[in-house]
Image (cartoon, rainbow, N blue to C red; front, side, top):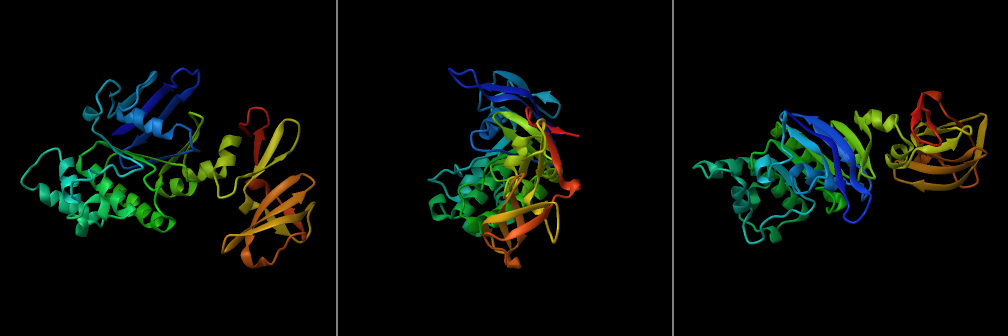
Length: 325
């Protein structure tokens, strides 16, 4: 089974711009497509369009080989997990989960108990949402989505409102959902590390358009546009002018400190992140951010020599911003 969109267009009201401008994606059963992009890129609009909650000005949504663009949200058999848990506040967790079942069969409680146990909320079934932590509420939301027996699952930044200490554990639960749910999953986030950790495939959405898509590591290592190069990464890709037509890019972790080299510069700033540190080096070709071991002992005003290994250098057309061979 495959979930796909074809040239989706969603227009802003009273505006010539598009929230989605010809967006085409595809994800097959057993796979998770992570869609990443900055705020306002159109990520939530994309999920709402797939789920049938957003009017389309053009394009199509296809599930299992059939167009579902004209169907109601209820008829699409697509579950959507929101940023906020959207649980019924007056119901217990068990009642919220049971409500999601399409049939109230005699073994409904067994299905609820099994799914709750898989998402580590079995001990919380008698509680109401206000008695749960943020992470517990999101686990309950994911359980409810699975119990609705969907053909496809959509997740809209489910970790966005969680404390950093909870994000890792709940992200592990999201990855665990993949093991229980056989259909296609589309997961959107603004966090590139989260997207790469969750997704089997990655799509980068910028200003309503997909700028790059494919294997997450390939998209990170060899972005197809300057926009993607700037967005992905704990620090953006370094971009330096190479000629009037070409800009070259290299990731901070790929720049090497060497004893001697043709490119020398002065450290103007250092920022420690724990095991590593980032230093900003001022060079004749422009400023370069370099990731180095935290214990290296580099300080502001130190002069260093740098090497840019050609196998890690990416070249872009300065005008179009598109990568060139």
